[in-house]
Length: 131
Image 1 (cartoon, rainbow, N blue to C red):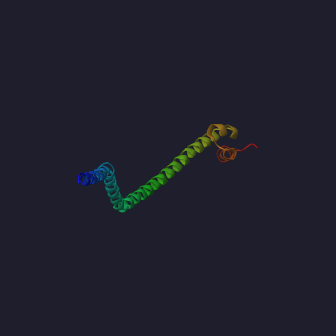
Image 2: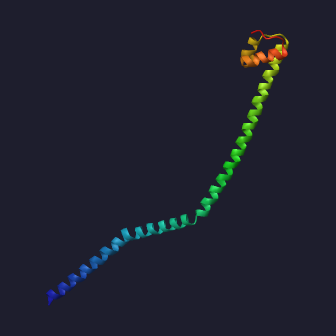
C-alpha cells in the first residue's frame, strides 16, 4: 500500500512539475511573445489607418513640387532678363567705344563680344570696318 501511495505521490509531483514547467515557459516565453504580437497587431492597425495620411502627404509633396517648379521658372526668366541686361550694357559700351573710334579688335576682350558682334557694332556706330 505504501508503494501505491508513493506512486500516486510521484505522479502528482510529476504533474505538478509539468504544470510548473508550462507556467514558467508561459511566463518567460509565451507572455513576452504575446506582448510582441499585440504590439505588432497595433502597429499594423496604425499602418492600415495611414493610407489616407500617405495620400495626403503625397498630394502635399506634389503641390510643393509644382510651386518649386513655378518658382524655378520665374528665377530662370529673371536670370535670362539679367543676362540680357548685362549683354545690353556690353553693347552700349561697345557702341560708345565704336563712336569714339576704337578698333573692333579692342572691343573683343574688353566687352566679351564675338568678332562678328564687334565688327557689326563698329560698322553701325563707328564707321568702316577694316577686314
